[in-house]
Length: 112
Image (cartoon, rainbow, N blue to C red; front, side, top):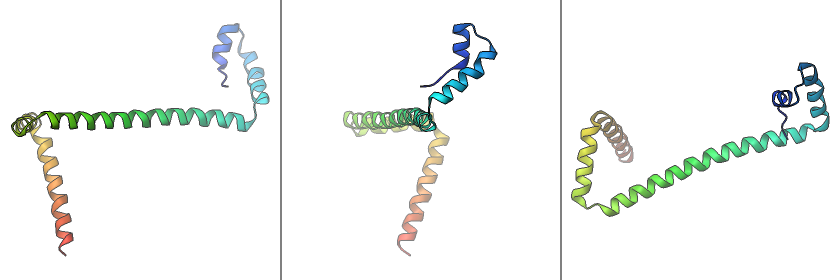
């Protein structure tokens, strides 16, 4: 149970003089463990929500990719790749360079 002193102050029309007793009453009526549990529950809810959103976004992206690959033939894939290269030439070159470097390094280490 959280307490919002400003909202209580606006709703009741009380002044700053009443805020300190209200806070003291709240602190007396709740143990440290109860307040810590409330905070932990809120943190868990936010973290879980963000994790669920990220997981759902990744799953949706994989599903769309799978659907695209199933719907396209080789010529369609080639055309899509050409469009992507024309639209984003520099990022494609950088990604290709990094992937090639990593594969070359892995192959070189394998044959040592």
